[in-house]
Length: 368
Image (cartoon, rainbow, N blue to C red):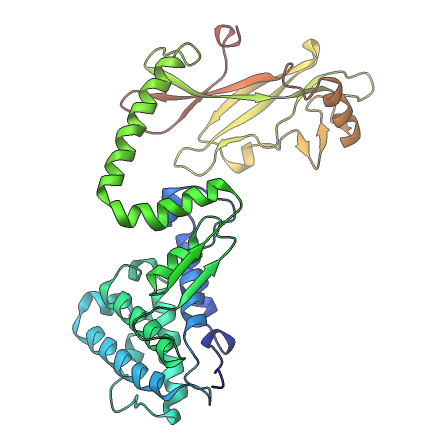
């Protein structure tokens, strides 16, 4: 048979998909399960997979069986949108369009191909929203369309299309392939990625709440053991507990007659994305050939300066001279990386019965 173009080759509601992807970026469910570099938005993966698995109904080679399936499946979905208030809210962007999808306006005939394409694109745009990703009506419709497309293109009835991702990384593509009704194969050279995929794709669906309870149980056990073993390095005092020590490597300013020790700090912001932003202020101390620090609570952008590192060069807070990158590297090489001479400049703490992180300057006891 002559294969038709897939929907993704013809059109895609990129603007709406991007909106949903941006919204998901900081709070996507898989990002809460694990952290991965360059994580692909689930919204984009879900939309692309649907558009890649489904033929374009407006293509002259689109199987008639798929036309029949689209007309039936989307008319049923549109009827649910009309009756279900929750579903109507999820489809608010295209609610008026769904009211026009009826057996009389979407007939299983090639001449209705453009109308079918338009309806499929609306469905994909709405399905990209994370709020719809677990809605039964959306899931049933997407999986029915995927199965119909597979069988109309020659797939064996009862089997499912196969999506392979040989560089699965964080697992967004195989996860969404399962969601839209395909079988997925995921692999990666990185063993961490393999473990993450097994947890997201195999263990979580198989064990459900039992896995959650076990992870929580052993997480608490590890936390308690770690706190006990590391207590001497993170001593509690005045209801506060250190959770991180921020260090900066040091170089000597090569400005004429300067010689001040410059802490290499890229940004002076300690906490910017919160209700109470916190930052550092560098205080020049030329007499002692160093700089001191001050913590700024409720910091504002206008009150926070730049760090000492910019494009590899180190700018002296005292004389303003920028030690070039070659000299910075040379000094750090002589220090064997600079870890031994690094300076502790901030301690991050938590407080009992209070949420959030707190910041303080180190004391003599901390340094000792």
